[in-house]
Length: 412
Image (cartoon, rainbow, N blue to C red):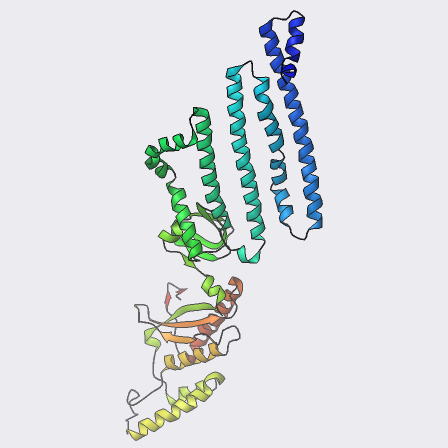
C-alpha cells in the first residue's frame, strides 16, 4: 500500500520535480482516482440494489417493498460501501498532509452520521406510508411518532457532529450541554408541547385523521387530513387549509363531529318565531276546518270529545271562550308538525323527535323543531332540514298563525 501511495510521487521526483510539488500532485491524482472509483462503485451498487428490489417487489404481494423503493431506501443504502472505501483510503492519500487528513477524516465521519440519519428517515417514512395503507392505522397519527423519533435522532446526530468538530468525546459534550438545558427547553418548547399533546390525543382518541372538527378559535371547520408532532392540518369545506398547533387540541375547546357521524343521524335543531298576538283559542267552526287536514283529523276528533266531556261535566260557561278547556291554534300546529316529522321519510324515527316551545322573546314565541336526519351527508342533511321548514313556514297560515318579520326579513 505504501508503494501505491507514493507511486506517482516517486515517479515525479525521479523526473526532477520538487518534492513539495510532487507531494501535492501525488495527493491530487490519488484523490481524483479515489473519487472516480467511489463514483463507479456507488453507481454499480445503486443499480444492482434497485434491480434486486424491483425484482423482489414483483414477486411479492405486499406493497411494502414498493414503498421502500419510492422512499429511496435502496438508493441511500447503496452509499454505505463507497463511504466505507473513502474512510479506509482517505487517510492513506492524505498521510503527507496531517492537517488536511484531519479535516477529511472528520468530514467523512460527519457524512457517515448524516447518511445514517438519511437511511433511518427513509426507512421510517416507508413504514409510515405502509401503515397508512392499513385500515387500522389510517386514522392514527403515525407521522407524529416518527417525527418524535427523528427529532431525537437528529439531536443525537448533531451532538455527535459537534463532538467530532470540537475533538471531545460524545459524553463529555453531552455533559457540557447540561448547563444549557434551560435554553434547549425554551428552543424546543413547541416540539415538547406537541410531543406531549400528540401522545394524549392518541391515547385518549380525541382526534383522528378523517374526523370532522370545528375549532372556532382558529377558524377551522372541516376534515383532519394530517396530524404531526407540531401541527394538525384541517381541510375546511371551502377547500382551504387551516394549520393548528397540536397542543391546542388539549388546551382549547374543539368540537369533534365523529360521534354524530358514527350515530344513527344528524341533529336538526332550529326554531321559527311566531307572533304572540296571532296565538288564540280555536272555535268549533275553526276546529271543523282543521279536521280536513288529514294528519291531525283523528287527533282533533279525540281531543274535541275529551274537552267537550270535561266542559260539560264542569258546567263551563262556553259563552266566553276562555272558560273551561280549549284547543289553541299553536297547540294544534305543534301537534301537526310533530306528526308531520314523525312521518317524514328523511327523519330517523329511532331517535328523539320533538316540537317544543322555547321561552318567549321580545320578537315572539319560538317554536323549535328537534329531530335527527337519517342522511348525515352535508348536502342531503341541509335538503332534509330545508324540506321540513319549507313545509312548516307554509303551513302556519292554515292555523291562523303569523311568522315574526323584521323589516321584511324573515326571522328563524
